[in-house]
Image (cartoon, rainbow, N blue to C red; front, top):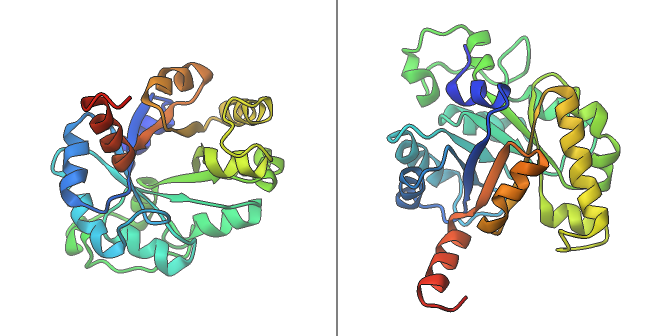
Length: 249
């Protein structure tokens, strides 16, 4: 059984959200009320940890906004715990090879498709009351694979073709650094990599995603072919709004 988020991604809808870096349930609620179509709790670089994830999930879901989590590692126990708390998808950073992607994605799904541990009494399973088969639960989860290295670019065609990949998501800072042009997001080398990700994603029927730090450049990302776009993060948006309000920019 799929979920609205998975359905919308797989239909190729244009979806905007933001990264939650501050680890605050109240901030998550503000972002949900601010028009985000999805929210991503950043457990790789964010200030919060798993102990604060549940509050952010509950706050966002109270307003009908689904939550994804970026895991700090692709370990089975880590991925399973995020899912048990009720996230609707997982973003995997720094996966460089098809084998790494297959291994990481296997942790999303219950057997026989994957190796996620089975427990029916957690929040994601309505504490034993959802009545869903394991395959139905599997169908409702989305997988976002980050493209952040030269190795990932070299293996992009095979990675995009792996069953279960829903979004190829560019990490601009890491990818530009890996290409030898750190932070130079208009450099021809980085632009070529962006276009390659979009073209490969379209060819394989998956979404292309990217984090756009400047809200003024979001429409340009859409025109370039990105359909899953993060408009900065909670902290960067707050800082930007304050600086604009105080006429500092």
